[in-house]
Image (cartoon, rainbow, N blue to C red; front, side, top):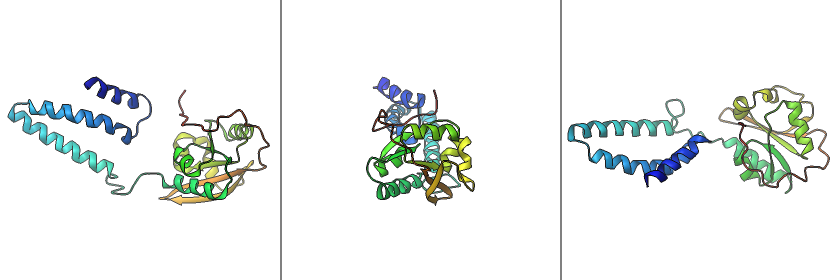
Length: 200
């Protein structure tokens, strides 16, 4: 059982970590921590319970947003609203370049991964894969695609035209149409593109 818990911990830590991925591991670890604390001598046991309670309180405080965002959810609502807009305003089969699987879920359109590249290379890739729309999320792109920060400055943006923009919790998101539109192609791309990391 301990080995299973260690595997569950090692896998997400080695790749892509978000708090929700650690919940199964924590459930297993808590059982072993409680067993270990039960075997401690009484003076040590009091310290262990005090430390465990403090760690639990700090963990809950951090999970609820910390001192800056108390009880303010950190989920990126703008991805949902962009996905809903695409679902309502585009036909099935529309190809959308994005970094977000949340947007993929709400839009229910064909997603194309956004390459780590300059804007001109991104446009070349988009045209080669018959992309109809590019979704630019200021919050993610600032950290993961800083070379695309110009998409949030005043236009024009050669090769792109803004069709929708929104701001949620101070985070802007824009949907661009290719201008002029891409012509055909993209038939060799999978119809369901999963998460694409930025490493490797």
